[in-house]
Image (cartoon, rainbow, N blue to C red; front, side, top):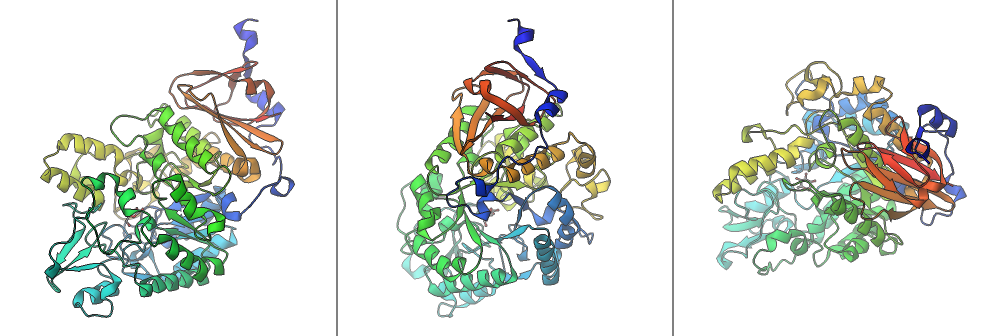
Length: 583
Ligand code: GLC
């Protein structure tokens, strides 16, 4: 057989013949035997960073009315839930992750009436809402903290962790955002130190105090009564602490999760939260962080624990966190081992980006003009074809890219600014530091949404709080909406495929071609339905031999017009993503 005969070019016509991208659902949940089916497992979460989504009052900051204006757009994405980063009253030291009133809306985002209207608009469209609950710490401007610091015998004193200076200096604790890396801040008002794992304006709440826990449950009930459908618990693995603050081994800060995560009473508090709040409403809760081991993660989310329903681990995000790029092996191993650990029990999340990391395509794909669209589509295919509840970060449905700031004055993020000061005082190589920041900074993922080709990408009539990426004339929602081959329209096809095919939600995952240098290949199987997912993670053509290819029944999605396939082999084009149904 010659090469030409061996490889059949599956053209657009061929795809039509076999029923391709817009095919009807192949099965429904009721027709397959799914154990523990749940709506929040079947959902697709769209994460909105409200500061950067859409500004309607010209102050340069996104707002809730901006989300209201775009409800139909959100619906058109095929997502079923929205998680929104904090929009509560806040002095904004950490862009809302320093809350000064958990029941009030930050004026620059709008009013409670706007929130109610937005929530109703989402619910009217069958979309749920996930609230960000930031209760490892509050703002230092919260009334509780103002009271707490006022004197040693104030009734709110034990709402936070204080260490009286007469006992000497407390044992060192590392702070993730402090410019000196010191989590104890001395306060002369009561001659004591208070604890802050994050910035000094974010004092840690004392969860060992039952009154604090009750306050949190009341806040959660307030929002559950309003109708929110889920809670994302910020930095939650850190809440329980050994309040004797023992000496930790030298260098512990290199593995903060091990020493700060899964504190002594965490599970007791989660069961209490479950009894008080989660079990009382049709809601779910997802924890940011899962401790250090698979067992830690299982202990948080397994159904028989009656604690949380979902969690997300950081290991996927840790891949490629340096100037050196990552290898497909590292990437594939992380997702495969987490999937195996949760194959029988428990449920996790799948995501490649959020507001704390760079843009997905810039980190894991290729944001050059030549490959940006193909690699964005390929990565969206990955997120939406894996087991676990997928999280899609706003703008990634368009293939938005990093902004790559060069100078420290351009950054707004406290982590970048204080991290820079700390690196300077430690005498680090600042060129390397800035180069790394340019690639990995959180501001990369926070630039405003690119709606159209007009000034500031249609995000605001004013001056945006963070510059819009200059590539907005090329990459924007209006333009992509009109282009059937855009990243946006591919994303819609992919969400549709997941929504209509429970095999992509519940099916078993099996890794194939385990050591292939460039192609990530796996099957998802549910009952007698099987899909084969092939993802080329490279900018070159990649050939792959697989016995499964002999049983290909049809292509269900493809980010190129064609695919070169033989009896048991296939050649994928740069960043090609194809899903086949297998007979
Ligand atoms: C979480 C948030 C992050 C925030 C930090 C402190 O990691 O995702 O944005 O800065 O907690 O609240």
